[in-house]
Length: 73
Image (cartoon, rainbow, N blue to C red):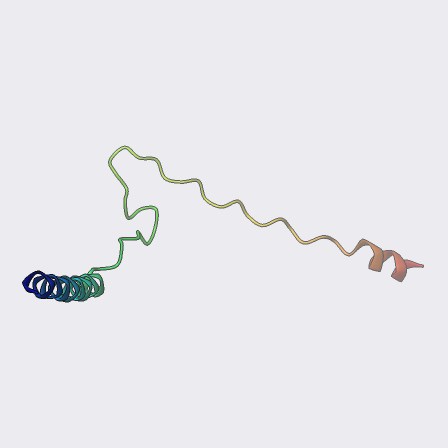
């Protein structure tokens, strides 16, 4: 009888301990700051690093060749 009671107490303590661990983990996760994300390539610049190449300019819009030919006819 004593071993059954001891087993139940141990099981209850283990469940209570698991709940506390889960609650503590949740609290730590909520307090954790968000991961660092640099806002620009210059934010993490180290001495001697080259800057990234700028984006190429957009292509020019196509000329309306068909519309001008129709007007000439």
